[in-house]
Length: 205
Image 1: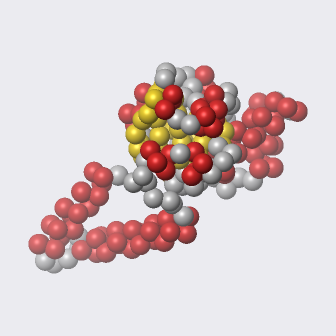
Image 2: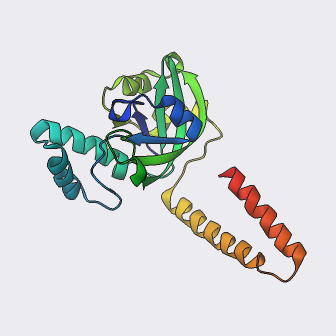
């Protein structure tokens, strides 16, 4: 499990409250299109072509965008700050939302988040405080999750292994298929139970 810090002003617009209320995070850089499965080389070409960037400026943008799109993984921890408080969440998969791929919104590159809690920044250990002081839009914590001390602050948070999450996602899809079949049953009680369970799952998403 990796830890990232992210700033809350993608494309120069303060989005903290929206992140908190709507359960997502995003970066700016509109105009690059859908970046799912895009290689680092192709990403570099798109940044250069769209923004006319080169040299250090291109490398800096490439590193930050690639961190959000490819380095960050489902189940990793992200920390965002609002004044003197750090807010912690687990992140979902990268999602491109074309409706916001414009200069006015600039928030088309997104990940859903599940908020875990918040802590005063002064209560975090020195290495995490140093991470949060980094001025980049996004950067990765260089040490292990255990060294961050967050396992002591969020003891109920289990380690997330990619293979376990993939297996769970597959089982979840199979369970949904079963519920869909139950909705077609000739038995009204079975249909009602399936519909009730789907509503419960929807509300929990």
